[in-house]
Length: 357
Image 1 (cartoon, rainbow, N blue to C red):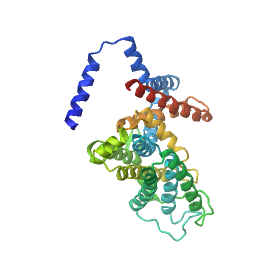
Image 2: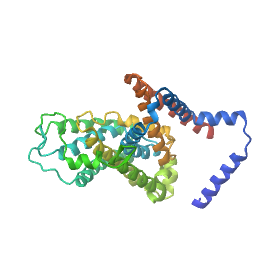
Image 3: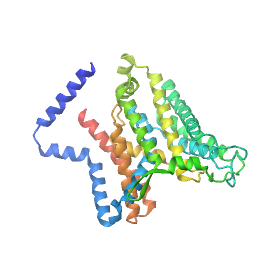
Image 4: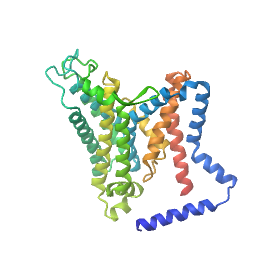
């Protein structure tokens, strides 16, 4: 079926839905399909009423900055979910690339400098190196998924442990005895956490623009390239995609490699944003990314997802967690809230799939 035919078919279904009467069942389905978003909007409204500082410019910019800090890793995980998979190694790749970036870009005068005789190389060169490291691990994941037909959960669970071992060894390889990597060079800190724009006197960090540019690039890749079309076709139906001429092996590896590069950008950002990196940097980032993707409508059924949905999902999570912190909710409860969000979102996603089926 041609793209034009598919578009016409989608428009026909949309028009048919629009002509349907608003019955109680249709309203209930609409509420259930968007239940998580509705609950989060209600929660945000409640938080804004309880703490009026929540929607002040400084707080809004803080939420925007946190959203953009986590956005690249979610963009990467989103592609893996489109393929009916996931990536549990994302957080460890973030941690490894954060520590590599920070160690290479420590100031010459930093105390407990990891590589004593190293002059900080150009910032963009280190970013490229980090992306290559992330892409290599991502391609490694994709190879085992594509070649041996292993489930991404198993593959990335294994590589999560492998990467963490590399991270621990790397942290102890330098001259700082495994201590936190800090004392970063000004060129690195300024590039990530510096600001070229202020709103109401509050600076917007530079990494916000980096993440937004990445989001635009990923939107283009997902929607306007042959690779993006192949990715969605593969996620929707692998056998049909293969018959249609899609190179399943290459596409799978490329999706995971691109995801790894996105994790590395997050690691590069976190290296300067955290400014004191340890082996725990990036811990559990994959759970935030998975939660954001399922909130934003990226389906584990496969072949379904949009970049704007990923952005909305990350933003909603940051709104909730910043807001809960501002009204004094115990941070120990955040994990159960995050777990509940993932479980509830996946249950709603499966319900929509079963209803369509």
